[in-house]
Image (cartoon, rainbow, N blue to C red; front, side):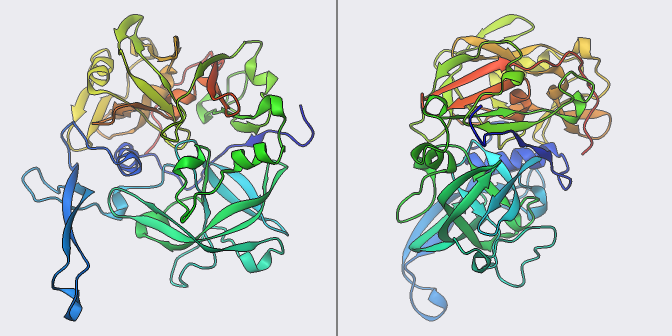
Length: 431
């Protein structure tokens, strides 16, 4: 292990409450896809006027139809805005990161599905309720430098957004200091963002999808590589995502990230299996052309998937999703919750072995993670749901908890070994 490289503990977020529909709405927003299964949420058109003039800017201009996430309060009702209480940031786990000199410590969501590093800041309006949050004060850091003319904005499908300006400062991630890292300071947070349970986000996707304008900025990992903070032979980071359900397993459910090295203990004597990635869309995307349910192979020719640590669920195509729940006795699709449910008292031996292909080798979801959240009336909201019209799968924590994941940025490849989890706890996580 190189000097100063150590595990970064991933902590359970004490404010997070599991909700299947809220996590699904978060994904609809994040990836802006249209649902293909019935339910209250849909992607609709909303007319906006641009270039208007006159009193109250009511006249002229050009009509522009924007695709936005909407909700029907009843099956025959007209769709309207999605209320803030219907969604939440999907940060079930957070990691401590220190920014500035002297350091100010924040609990951030490490997200391989995005590429921004943004934090709550003192530039937010005084009316913003910041209770429970660490708020970055650039005036208290001697190493902070504002970036003239730079701004950022994250916009979600329902019209919610976070935005602000940009500066650079030193960022300490588990003892590894990245100098002059671009920090995006929140100046405006819509209600959906302001109700989030973390202090911001640290993106681990590729800088091509960073939202800073007029020029995107490098991610922390890209800067680690450029500054030679991590060895040339290990330009990578890893994710070992444990769970409270695993407290009786050999690893006791520990959860951590590493940067610049692969943890030998987590490998448990195994050799990682690697597959090339396609980062042209900015994601950790790889071929996933096969799946299996209880050993029965399902051909998915041409299919791809992305590994997303910022997502709790796994999303796959409707045909595969249906086949998975057909293998669970008593399961059903619930339109009101817009997701698949199954009986909470389902025994472990009645749950199927569901595996997804990673560039030629299958890795199975742990049976205990097929159950995501309580759905009331003795039913459980499943951890695998429909990806709608998205052309690729999203493999979030539901799947990632079964492996030790290696994100090899230097070699543009994704690696995995099976995580040892001999006991399975099928109990339903509370909502």
